[in-house]
Every structure is written in structure tokens, then in C-alpha cells.
Length: 330
Image (tube, rainbow, N blue to C red; front, side, top):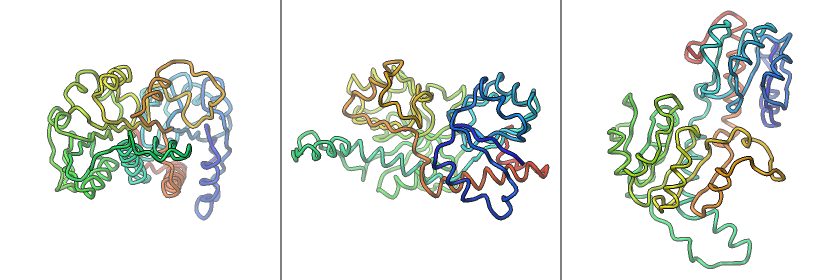
């Protein structure tokens, strides 16, 4: 099995090279820093598979080129697959395998870190103290203990977030199409009930046609005044213009975003010398009660190892004509 990796960073290379041993030693990997696109897809000629990440756009044009040069497998080193044209993959007989779970705790811990940081103004306190300003003015937060957390989506990551909030002494409201029996302390309710009763709302659902812009002007109007909103799932779950309107109307005590709508050109890249193409990101960064991170929820050593092992396992078993159904995008 020969695999061409796109959009790779040093931590990707280190993690995969470290795990290319034992039963995976015959898998050959080449790494590209550039992402996959109609211009670069042809570089996969001679490879059995390509491996892409969360920001890679694998549309029908790219898939057609991959099929033409003999690629049979698209490996996603992430859980989400909204960036892949699945119908086109079926049309050109390409299998798409993903990593449905690598370390749900990693993302949930980042979500609660954002919530705690924006609540206790850690980002502002850090800057103030570095300027020798030890005043506490403007740093007042609120206890999470005794408050209500609303978790939208109770898959593996949402489940981990529910457990963390429960451990903090919060009442946990949950919303999902399927009740998770492993969360006896969580109270499942309608989305409207969750929105109107939660002090902290955290998004952990996939991006689909149904969930796109789940958070919009209407849903924001149903939230408590002074709510904290966290998104570590997908940027498209939130209508950013409506969010900005809500922030300006002082609806939110704080907002923590590890993902946002126009992140594709920014995520994982150093753009400190660039002029950003649109004003959405700049406007988000201008608010003192907003923290934005660069899609780093997955970035722990344990998660990177989990991603590497599952991806290599997918490649190995595909090469042996055995498909892991749980990991297959159908």
C-alpha cells in the first residue's frame, strides 16, 4: 500500500513515522505540505490511496482525477466527512474511510478549556499581567458549579463533554436524535428547551444539511441573556453574521470558537503577514469576550497517535480487501 499524504504538518509526519512499524512496516507514505486540489490531485499517480485532513476539499473534480490516476482509497485522518463529495466517490468507485473516534476527550477538554477561559477572562488577564497591569477590573467571571450546561450532540465527544460538565457540578441538558444510555445524569430535551435554559451551550454535532446554521438569529433569540457559546465541531453550524449581531447586542457573556465558517484559508497556517480576504474573522477577533483558536481541539499526543493507528489500520485492511464498516463513509 502506497499512500500520498496531503496538507501535512510536522506533527503529522512525526506521529505517522513513529507508528510505521510492526504490521504497518510495509505501508509506504510520502508527505506533501500542499493540500489536495484539482492542480495537485494528479500527483497521486502511482499511489493506492491519498490521505487528507479536515480542511481538504475533495469534490467531484478532485475525485475524478484521483480515479483516473488509479487511486482506489481516500483516507480521512479525521472524523468529519462533510468536505468530501460522497456521491462522487461512489460514482467513481472510490472507498472513503475515516477515523470516527481517536480521542473524544481531547476535543471535549479543549471545549471546556475555551469555556473556562472565556468565562474567567484568562485571555485578557494574561495580556494585562504581561504589561504589569495587576488590576482585576474587567475580569469578573461566574461559577459553573450549579449552572446548566446544554450539550448539542451526544456522540463520543459530546458524551465526554457531558461528563466533564457533570464533574464540575453542572446540571446537564442534552439534545440528540438518539438518547445515550451511558449518560444517566443527563436530561434529554428539545432543542428549544435546551437553548432557553442553558448557561453554557456547547456544540458537538456533525455538519449536515439539517444542522447547517443550527445557531442563527432565531435560535440565538431563544437563549438566555449572558449565555456562553462554545463550538469545537464545525464552523457551518453557526451563522457567523447572526452570531456577530448577537455579540453586539450583548446576548453572550462569552463565545469560544475552535472552528468558524471561513477557516479553510486560515486553519493550520501562519498568516501573520497576510491581509485577510474578508472581515468576518477580523470582526470575531475584535470582541473582548470572544476567544478563537485554530481548530486545535484534536491536538494532543494521544489523539495524534489514535489518528495514526486507525488510519494505518484502515489502509492495511483495505489492502487486504477487508473493510472496517464503522469507519467507512456510506
